[in-house]
Length: 147
Image (cartoon, rainbow, N blue to C red):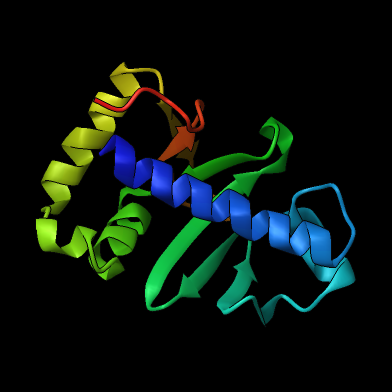
C-alpha cells in the first residue's frame, strides 16, 4: 500500500507544481484557484475541477480526488473512498482487486507507521445533526520507507 500511496501523493504534488508554474504562484492551487484561473480546466493532459477545499484530477482515466488543508502546511487529506477510486481506476492497481475493508485495514497500518494520521471532522456548521466524518491526513510524504 505504501507504493500506491506514494504514487497518489506524487501525482498530486506534480499536478500542483504544474499549476503553480503556469500561474507563477508559490502557494497551493486550492488557495488561488478562484483568483487566477477557472476552477475547472485541463493542464498537460490532466482534466481537473476544484471543489470546496479540494480537487479532483483525472489523467488517462485515473482519478485523483483529495482535499488540501492550507492551514496545516498544504497537507493532503483524503477519504478511504477517494483512495479506493484511485485504485479502482488505475490500470495496474485495479488488478489487485482490493476490497474497501482491506484498503481501510492497510490505511490503518500506515497510521501505525506514522505516514498517515486520522482527520476527524465533527458535525457540519449549519446542520442540526452531529455526524463524525473520518478521513486521513498525510503526515509523511514520499520518499518513505516502502516494505
